[in-house]
Image 1 (spheres, one colour):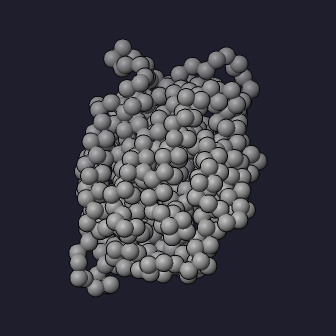
Image 2 (cartoon, rainbow, N blue to C red; image 1 turned 45 degrees about the horizontal axis):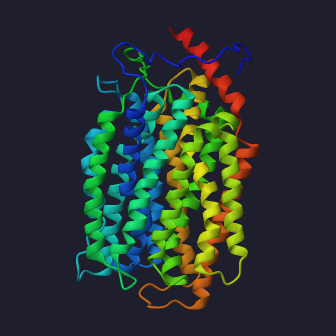
Image 3 (cartoon, rainbow, N blue to C red; image 1 turned 90 degrees about the vertical axis):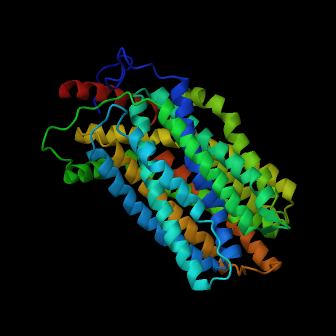
Length: 472
């Protein structure tokens, strides 16, 4: 990057105009509602679907792990295909990305409920086939909404502070859904410490309705301000040029690896915690308290996010968060014969570190999109976000497989009233030592491999202003 222009950065694009309202609270709330809608579906699935498959459908943990692995690999491929498709579409008066959220929201929420339909008296083969069809269908439809939603952040505003705010509000939306689902649902769906299939379906229908309402709120409150020049007639996206840019886009490559690892840790914790509280601590209801602490950490840190990022930078804040999270889980692993209260207190420390990273993660993606434009001269919001989503899906795939295989490895038996102490101890090890190693690895990658510190991110903004002037 050049070292010219020490002036303060100007808006990155032609986002202002007499008919376009300024960026403000309406956009933040609208973007929050988008991820609230996403996670009314996603968190429900990531928290309860595995235990629903093992304890209601009677599918083995290993078979569920294989299903999650296969489905997430397929989702990762469809993410890139859909992102490329979105980038090839022209903008409409309503924007380039919002129309797709509007069109695909209803099919998505219907598929969310279908996954939790249990037809009594069917054979094992039927339940496994039904799980494959409905879960893969849900994943594909989730892609059609999530890719345009995630890409939209880069065109709501070009200002770095605005984008960090959107990342924080998006995370708050996800945490709100997590709080409602993980804290409230266990009180309803578990009867005598066993999952109820009928109650699970009732929750799935309720959250599907709430998701649809949230998506419509996102569409109506958010504004796409940045209008990049349309490609000339006959001009197509160059895959060769895109791939060449990706090979040089170190910020994107690094954040892809970090996100893959982070999602592995997050999904692993989300899935294994059901078994941890249900079997190791003997209280599935404790999952609600854990979820309250997890969401509370995010909401408490939100007011401090902008000042922290402004002072230290996104990279520095995120790396510090991962160091705290990894250390917290390592301490949990090292405490012998831990009680539930002590576990929750120590875990809260790690959750604050987890929250710091989670609040700024989406802002890294917009920086990677900008860096791709800096390298190639082309704006490919959907493609870059889809590649990022690809990495997240890989993390989900590995985590889904890892959880299932880990449960099988430690000897977990579905349908058994009480697991052996050896199995319980194995579950505890998976729930603490593995996420500790993952989060510490993310800390090292961010610290030593991610190149866009506070100073270089500011310079990228300036260089893009200069390059965009040459396009006009």
